Image 1 (cartoon, rainbow, N blue to C red):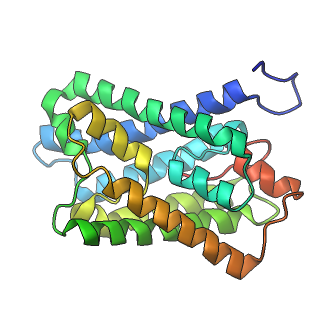
Image 2: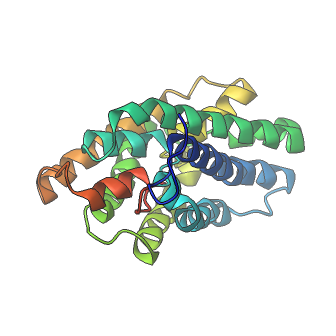
Image 3: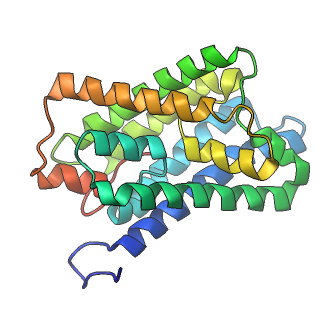
Length: 247
């Protein structure tokens, strides 16, 4: 599909391209930080690895939010869709772009650091799989509740969305990264797992975040009521016309 004329909003090519780029950069920082921590013998701390992706997301919301809505995460795309703020026909292209970007980043990490990519594969470290699913669901519910709550307001562009979303990602990582990876993002987990050939635990990082996203949508409906499909500000926030949102 061709991009529309200037001033009519980004076309699907630019939206999908922004999602691919954002997911690639996010995966490179998140999984790459884990790989670099292994290579450096632990010089990159757990706190640094938790905060770095959050800071990147804050920057990407400013840089790419007006192109695609800055989802970079299938759970966020699904949540906006369930909330009836995002067009159904864009769901598959967005998620495909997010997964492709994450896989490209994983290939780059493997090329730079070889087998250390394994450190970037999210898997439970100190808990069993069931507990990991529950933690992922809770963390994602927190994150997506913040995202949907911000998107429900009239003014979504600017520091409020970036700081709220980035801060939430950081706090979730700070408490859960050493426990089970604190992914909250199926794309971020899929890229390294597929490229490293270690997909045994990958289901955790799809089931948990998608459950959490669905819970956040239910919370948003309870707190804010049904979404108004004709509210242009909200739809722009989800889809990238004028808003900026999401991890």
